[in-house]
Length: 92
Image (cartoon, rainbow, N blue to C red; front, side, top):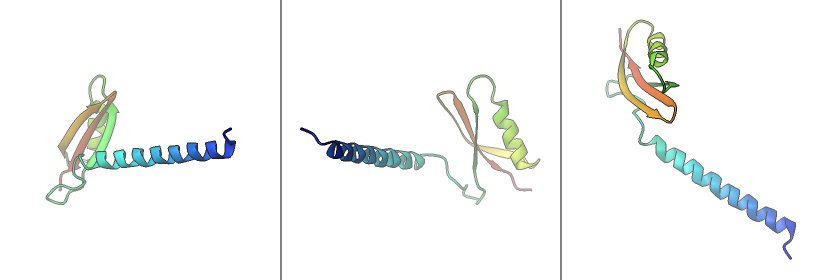
């Protein structure tokens, strides 16, 4: 006979282990991404837009964020239905 308390404890322990594994997987994925800062010290900024069609939404976000100074593309990627543009604003 299984007591409901011990079953609940095992389920909680299993879900905690799964949560830790998910956290570790997420953190390891971060290490392979684009740099947070370029070698010249400029910060990079990721923006996302739909992968289908043109990527004008991402370009508009980059232009608006850089307020007329222009930007340099650091990385572009598509994952599922999401396109990600990583850029750094140019200095004045």
